[in-house]
Length: 481
Image (cartoon, rainbow, N blue to C red):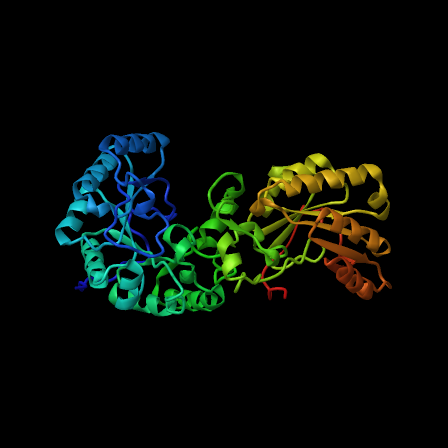
């Protein structure tokens, strides 16, 4: 039963890691007492599901040597190995690891064992309470009667002083219940202040149960309402890597979305989030999305099975000649250091009126957009054309999530040549620079239809960027449609 202890303050306890990011993962066993139909690491995929003590010791040695601060103990279900779990927690803390997290379904956790875990040094738990309704939780857990046992385990952990984050893995059956789930947590588990909104990913068992994939067109409104209710209850909702694209309810939650946080911190250079091209990709609608540089896209299979349902850019990029909300523009030449003034913007453009291969190379690797404003004579210059072709080839060689936006702008008088070139090079958008007295709307429409490209008309006086400040930025306001 829940205790009468008052809920904690908004500040996390001193032994809680503020970033919510797991820095290391050690799986004690792949065996599990539940049979979740969506499990992405099912025991049947592991010929030897439980590693020897010596193997666990080597993994712990490597983690301690890495200097990482948070060790997550997972499975399978790690509480199946009660003695081993306690031993590893004690050893990790004794060797200076400040944060040890347990990933568990909590079904096997009772009050004495929860106290033993806390005494061993466990600082937090990540618990898979899958629904607010018993029948849905048990169905997704693959274990009848799991719901009350999970709640009892949660109460025990909380009573023992362990900080708990919930992990509802949202499926098609529960996609419209997220707001009700938040209300349930606030009422039944008032000491819990964090919910990580995971979603079924099409791997492991879920690859054979694709009907479990939620429809993002339904889930998006549910996430937005759940976030509204969570804020009213003082609960933090997090969008993890196995969560959702930013357009599915998280467009204004970049500070609690793992992919967006990693991208801003350098996720384009080797961290898991936006860089993990083996699992996710951008789709056609992502090309002009204002959040594309902070989002890894959707699971490959989601595009195929759900047809990209619900994936609609929250706002379209306005481009450096007419920047939209959250877009910053800096002028080349420069290098990665010149981005410092604009890093707080979700999307950064590097604008140039001269094609420099060296500049183009670092832009391609920096997760920013490249804006080429070329005069008419360069569109036919052999050297400039060779440079554009090299740029296009290099761009196409990049993994999907790292392909940067490249927009081309040219005078209205060179419209057809610019669109033909952009089409051949598979660039994203052509902006026709319209001088006072010119009207390029009809021509832009015709060229867009002819070449199947996004062709826009931009007043000539809107360029170039403000070179005095080095950065031009527009924030807030209504999203561009």
